[in-house]
Image 1: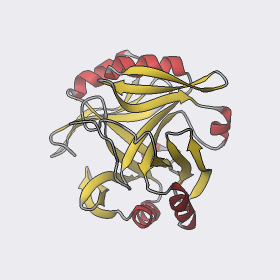
Image 2: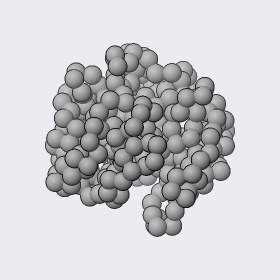
Image 3: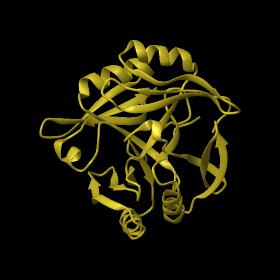
Image 4: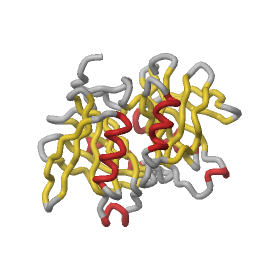
Length: 262
């Protein structure tokens, strides 16, 4: 797959890790996925660390701030959705019941963003690209391949995202649970599952998936680097083999060896 220069509106385009300890997060993820990093100063002794695979941007990480914690953000992954007009989309999201946590703002010359929570409390961000389109490569080993909403209110979430982005839905079954696929122009862009009581007080959130060549080997490596396997490697019929992992600082993500491209 060649370098991506534009992400269509209504698709996931960028992924950031908000780290409690940036140096530890860098060590963990670079060893796990073989990423290289590039530091970009963003003022007051802070850096925005680009994560790269074969010279192409796949995401970023930075130190979570106290103000972000006060807004409800926790250490972990944050996903961005591409839009043509951040200001208009943020205002529409507000009218549909979202909370606009950060009003639209310019990120230097890279683009314009806004941070929101959906009606069930899941954080996500909007990205209007200028000089930086987002991830330069996806759906390859060591890069993003899927996003899944785990929500306490599936009906409200479905109504919100389909109205905001024009997504349609397909409903199926996953191990006895209702699984909703979000589609954009007939192509899958993400999934949704209802929160179950066994997950306790876990808030609604978007779960990021990374593609891997060998789920068992990567899960074992993650464990050796201090992560905990929330769901050990298991097969998902007609999809692939996946594992749910909590990194050493509490951020949750999934890995999957896909049977075919999603």
